[in-house]
Amino acid sequence: MTMTTTDSPAMTALHQRHQREMAEAGGQANALYSVSQLARQLGVTARTIRFYEDKGLINPSRAGTTRVYTPRDRARLMLILRGKRLGFSLREIKDYLDLYDIDPTQHTQVRQLLTGVRKRIAKLQEQRAALEQSLAELADIERQAEAALQQRPK
Amino acid sequence: MTMTTTDSPAMTALHQRHQREMAEAGGQANALYSVSQLARQLGVTARTIRFYEDKGLINPSRAGTTRVYTPRDRARLMLILRGKRLGFSLREIKDYLDLYDIDPTQHTQVRQLLTGVRKRIAKLQEQRAALEQSLAELADIERQAEAALQQRPK
DNA sequence: AATAGCCATTACGTATAGGTCATGCCCATA
DNA sequence: TATGGGCATGACCTATACGTAATGGCTATT
Image 1 (tube, rainbow over the protein chains, first blue to last red):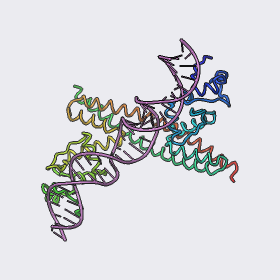
Image 2: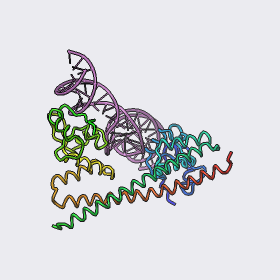
Image 3: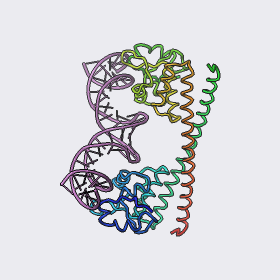
Image 4: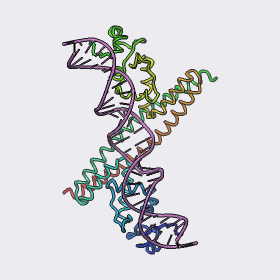
């Protein structure tokens, strides 16, 4: 287990030894991360994470001015990225997360999510249809182009 | 057949009577159109057409300063719109059209087109796969959400 | 002559998701 | 102490495809 972890000053001051001890081995429940650590882990840039914060999608605590992320923050970030993969806009993702923050136990937010998900599904199905259409049309063009090349194989 | 056609000054001066005669009845080979006429016919705005010109995709002749479109221009525009529907960028469309303009009889451009089309097909197939993935994942989320609502139907 | 339409050009605005500096603070090691 | 990282904020930049004025000219009609 090599120590490739680079720690920020604040992180260093506050938790370096701790970090050294339980490093990035197993997802410890009390682990803490810096922006760049988290960024590396999740395959995005630090800029991206800060951008999400700017847009109100996450709210990490701070050690002085330095952002410090907990496993909860990390999980939230993963949710955000999943939402992105599924084609939701940051705005939509924020809305769902906000609902969840306001009221994580009620059903209202689940209903909202369900509605959003179904809308998204419908959209994707439309997209798929359009995509098939395009593929068919393109296949047609391909055939025609091939035929044209056959004509006078010059 | 009512005359709903509004003609521009230049168009009027130059071809009004002619237009009146063979109006927008059948696609005459010698018909001429103004931007807005063409826009209406093809379902886009005049701004869009001018934008394409600005980007070098079309080059209508002019009667003074006013744009005048021939059936050839019209056909070209339709090609552009088709390309758009198929997901090509204006830049890509321009490139193909340029090739065609330079050398409409040679096979080079057909080959280029074929290459582009195949690339596009590959991309769309990838997209389709990703889309299926998303749909599956969303269906899963949908199920989970429904289950959660079942739990305590509060 | 005034009004209504259509056309032209120029230029700034929009949305999305960050990228890319520039500048500066703080900490630790050589 | 000079140097190297890492972090922070702020501000401007990118790409795409037009939308939206603003301003002005020309023509037909009233």
